[in-house]
Length: 80
Image (cartoon, rainbow, N blue to C red; front, side, top):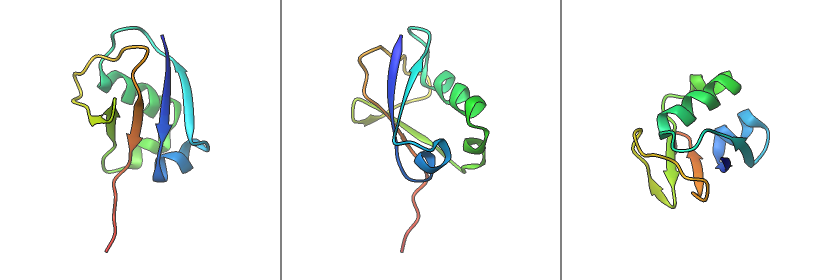
């Protein structure tokens, strides 16, 4: 299946673009997507956390992905 992934903050800087198109096996869980992205972009492994939102809600690692899902990678946020 083809996934479109929106990237924010440092994740966008690491990947070098605001959105990714990725061919990914149907019905795989979120944690498999994260592992694939960390393999493709090793600098993502250095982030203390990386949240995934699916259809505008934070996703559990076990949530299964579907082709029409809206996916976003949300890096750790700091501020003051």
